[in-house]
Amino acid sequence: MGDSNGSLVVTAGHICEDGGMVKPLEEYNKGLKDVEIIYSFTDIKGRAYTGTIIDYDTEIDICLVFVSNFETAYVPASRRPLRPGDKVWNVAAPTAEFHTGMVPVFQGYYSGIDENGKSSLTVPATHGSSGSPIVNSHGELVGVLIAMHRDMNHISYSPSMSSVY
Image (cartoon, rainbow, N blue to C red; front, side, top):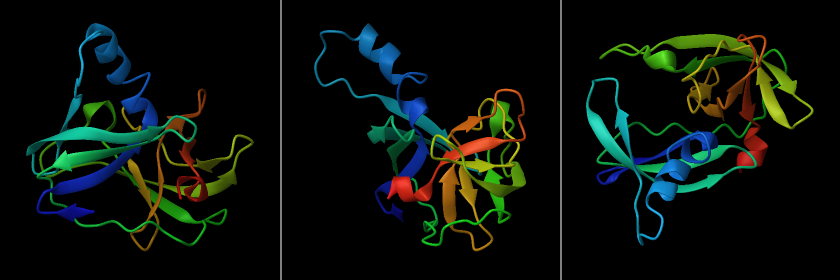
């Protein structure tokens, strides 16, 4: 949600934890107190912002970041559960495929919940897709891409919205 001070941004938890910058920086700064880790974000207009991790949940792989001075439109979370066959869209910049004024939009379908409780989607993904939003036809947030299938990059995963609430 955006205001004059910044916005809260949801991303993949592993970006904030083991696979991201938190652990290496904590190791490097052992013994130092009050170390603050700051992330850099770029909007579609090419403007740079900084962000600070508010919290993350390793179980559902979600991270909440406060991005300073970043004013953006509020994207509401959907309260209606997805049904198999529902069309979804993913706005992402995988492998740094991003240019000012352009960001790729991928389309797919919701397939259901897998045996691990994650939403399964037929949205193409690759390295760098993690943390990107998944929206429904009403422009509501229905997930955050956290992983892709090891052997099929046209299958991706998100925590179910019920686990995020």
